[in-house]
Length: 405
Image 1 (cartoon, helix red, strand yellow):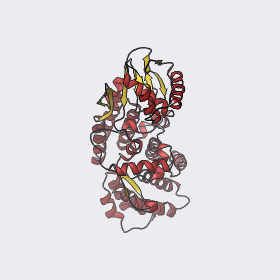
Image 2 (cartoon, one colour):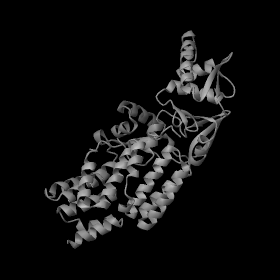
Image 3 (tube, one colour):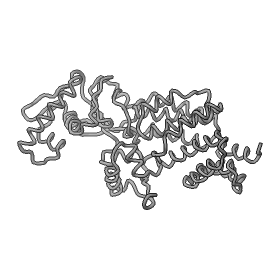
Image 4 (cartoon, helix red, strand yellow):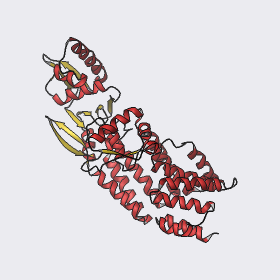
């Protein structure tokens, strides 16, 4: 056994990258290159880390499949930290097969967590939840257990389930304490602080009141019709109607909900949904068509009555509540991703949001003009970061939340 390599590995597991580098900084063998790459990743030098890990993977012989698989898993982790979401996703399943063949359960658990993290970054929450549920807790160290619990927190937050997030946070805190890693404990505490921040606003009588995630969960669980601006949906209990792909219908619904129990005048509806300040006959005809479509969508939950001056929302039972996002701007969804503190490329943002790079670029320009974001670097290495966000959480703006309650 190479005692120097073993000592460097123990230093990395203990969260001491500088101690690991002191032991292997002058060595060029594959194992030392891999440890140097991991150490550089831990201190934030992601470009250098990727280069070292690639060199180590290529230097290991064809029979050293386990060592090569570990390098690939480390490369995947660096790619996620660098928000390179286009990194080959098929590499991790192949790595998992190698770990299973060699009985490397700990690294297999870590690779599965990387898969879950990538799915969450892409907004594929259902798939991430399934993958996390398949994780074998017996194979996870305290560090991996804390990571899994933190991902469970994020999934619960995106679902708007505060009680589940609190339970997962308690598990994460316990596992982080067992790991003895200060950085991991700090990450858990940061997640706990985020849960206490306002996550949405309750709009009533022209006024908006901030709500924490727990308060949002209580509103959604109420017997009232909830018009959810965070998920762009209408819901009551387990019945939900998603309108994220019908922006005109949702704009009409929100205007009607904010006017409830009164009516929303035709001029206000036309301006809010179509942007027309001087309505004409064409706009009024289009309004009637869109109101008809909205009635069909809302049939399980409510109807829309015509009045002398406009239209009024009439829920089948209970009242109407309006949830608004904590931030309302064209670039809110982009800002929610930038809020994680990492530097994102436009291509990664477009991939995570399921939109075009051109759309993302327009949103980034608006954020930069508002002083909420800035570009770092030039050309292909250009990345975007946001200025520090305080006072509210962007969790419910993240992509991939469901509307099923």
